[in-house]
Length: 217
Image (cartoon, rainbow, N blue to C red; front, side, top):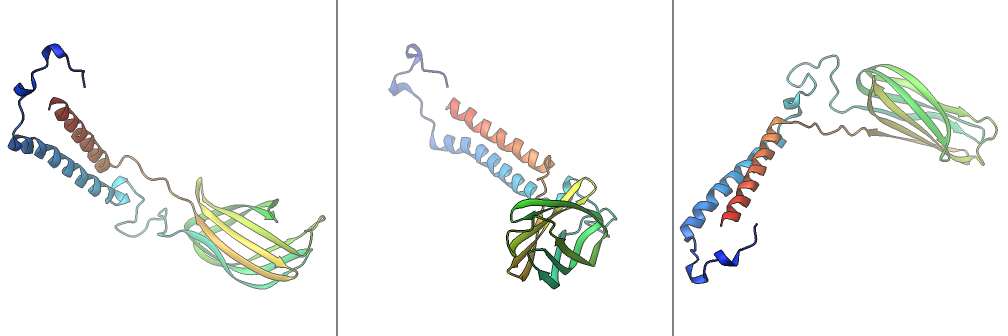
């Protein structure tokens, strides 16, 4: 807003005041545009992912490359388990809820320190399978027969990281326990939704129009 020039400033008594009706008429277009922009934004955000070119199978049979609704790789039913200061082993059942070929790259830690790494080919999911978690400790062994050993497995489909399956083995003086948790990879929010861009443009236009009229008032 430009500073007022005293040489051209009108006396207070001569300043024209807009009538109430004129103010209401001037406000209506801004309110209408703002309401329309807000409505379009809400509509755009409510659009399904398929509107931005999501993967196939949404409105029909899933294609061979389609993603499952909820992808995961989990392990449970730990049986025949044993542990000591020199080794541990347990049987488990794996649940591969990922459509298509899956490979796993993993690292392990012993009491928080890196122990080793591994790679697995889980073939094609979805599938349920038997597996084993075990390690025999070469010298030096854990400091005692009480330790925590973690398998951190990253599931991949080609270059896409699906998530991590973390299995924690605990040995407390010969007492074995195991837990597993799936940590899904957070997918990036798709950008470029046409409806969202239209709504954003209208909102910016409405804000610009309001500022322009406020400057003229």
